[in-house]
Image 1 (tube, helix red, strand yellow):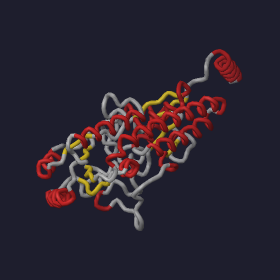
Image 2 (cartoon, protein in one colour):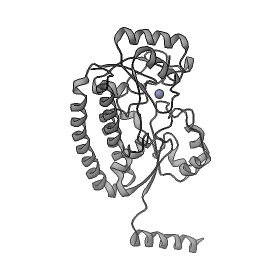
Image 3 (cartoon, protein in one colour):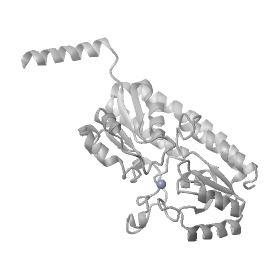
Length: 307
Ligand SMILES: [Zn+2]
């Protein structure tokens, strides 16, 4: 007993003196959170995402490999607002990792410090299958929320590894500076199109559209998470014609059949737009996500999808 204890101490001392401390092992539920963690953590963190950027984050297939990742994680980052409720809780439970259970220090819900839109007033319910019962969980699609998430990550990583605080502070400041520069670029690109009316498939874009001055007048889904119905589609087509809507945004994981028929009926352009890092191969990080989406959107608008 005593010898085991002594050698463990000796190994610990050797490890501390002889090599760099191990990186903080972070698992993020989405590639957006993983990207923001890399921005702040640099080589002080080792980050893996669970959902791929081209997958619907509400519905992710729970693979056993995810449990293994979670079992060794020091920190789990989640989007929250029940985005992951359909697949994450059993994975966390089966990981048997006390550090990352909800409420534990190694569990960070990024929605707690973000600006959340569409918070229901009155009774909270998932009635009729609405998958946004606690407000809109796609809030990362607003640069200032990216900044808020990065800030929450900075605070958390600092608490976990106080000695690395100067690194996290400097990296956060650098990200903030690059994000501000990028926002000026995005604002300039979108300025001529402010007030443009669009339709989206899922309610993924309220933060994005508010930030960049687009008005969403309807959705292909009757309610978030509910597939299109013929009645709803007919109403939507009429409303799009009435308001002259020429852009229909579709997330990469939805069937294009209904959007294509709406496009034919209204003359609107159907634009598949990535809501997440990794949604297209050139979207390698959080800032590249907005660069890509805004470039695609402006091209579609100029090609006849509006003003
Ligand atoms: Zn959603």
